[in-house]
Length: 91
Image 1 (cartoon, rainbow, N blue to C red):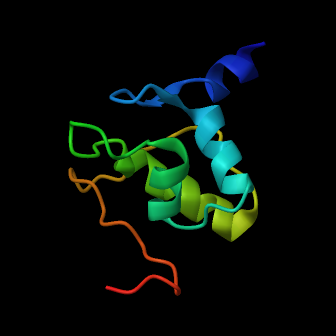
Image 2 (cartoon, one colour):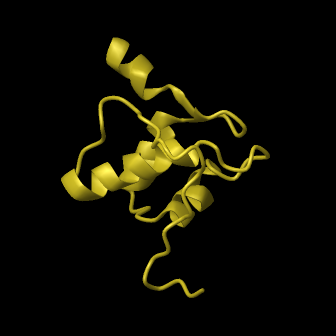
């Protein structure tokens, strides 16, 4: 029961997006931040995307290991990282 509660924690407070929703989007093929934004609306709220500091490490961990980290840890930069673009996206 506790594991489900952890997985359901809210990651994006502005748009009320929980961890389970984000993990599902990543498992379903969202392999860039922009794809996560489009699929879940996380990271694009009125706060300016403060949850991106948690989204980026989740995505990177999954892409590197095929699993999600047990604990969500925001990067320490104090600002949201820029979204990574997929090879098919142009600047």
